Length: 253
Image: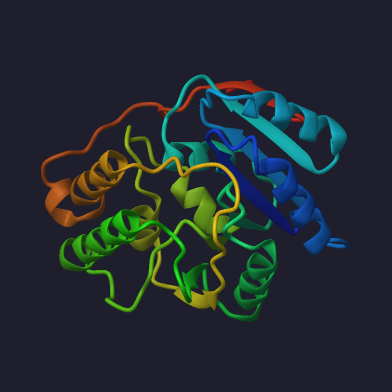
């Protein structure tokens, strides 16, 4: 039976209390008239993000789901937790800081529906990240190209929209340190990208640090490339722990 939800939007958040309410309001405005749902995943924030997420879910109970993780597991695990709760035929992923405009996600979703692609990535026309994060992203992209066989002109970003069958493939992962773009590349070559606007961050601070980018690079080597797979392949239950879920869902996993 076809899903009644056309698009699920997963928003992983860590200390995103200053930007979340404005982001949700913008999503609802841009996607007015569309059958969407928003899945907020609080990745162990230490500010008042949890209470804000609860308030948003209570204000929009028919549209917003809230997933509370037991501690900070990292962005990729948080996204997987959100993906495990979606209902939509397609799924978009948005950062919590407002730098990914929802209007651009709408364009990417339209492109996905017009093509036979499984995923459409947003390729930033002018990146507004710090210089060290841009340098880390460049280095990680180089590792993905050399070890993983990624085309040089393919930009892998957190800003993307996917079809539900691909999401189901990603959810089969049972390792402890997922690298989502590596899993996507391993699952499909029906990938395209669309040039999008990347806005300056107006509020709050990025949760990324040089240390996290280094760990991401190591994850790419051991979880994305064939080299890493020959040495490391962990098995077990999904590493994230869902402590609480709101807005019509249950935490029975």
